[in-house]
Image (cartoon, rainbow, N blue to C red; front, side):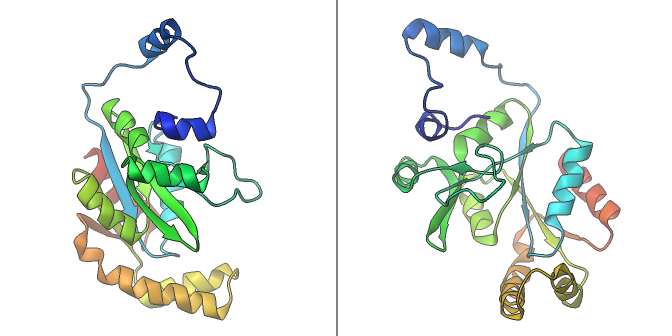
Length: 217
């Protein structure tokens, strides 16, 4: 999995060619662009709508589906693996990447930066792969401008009441946290018509099938 050279220095500081001959050998090993068109699929929806379950099912069924990995300046949580869960960067490095326009989108939440590395996505698409990106509404709107050929899908709950039930059934959050998520969900649901496709996740298999048809026809 590759990012720009600048960001790679933060993740793999020693994995770089040391001379011109070695650099040429490295370039020679890179796969050639594919004649099969790749795509960027952006998946958006409120918390509790089932995006994670959908993504896991899609990846289990389609091993060549590439899940985009975000970069962040927050510290890794227990069990998180750099390069698998996130690319963990220092704040200075992230801000430098912003200046060089190395992100398709980025935002700051709770004092930490989060962003989608551009090069990683573009290289996978050039190789004919489908790249799946789960993202917040603000990021999806930014990608509409920075990468307009992306296909954006909004996942809807069967109803607001069902969404609230799912959030409460988790049993992991306080009443205040649930109410905050529901308030945010109202704004997200109001924006669903901005997207290329809206899918109601009332039946998992049916929702998976609609996503598959949207991606592969």
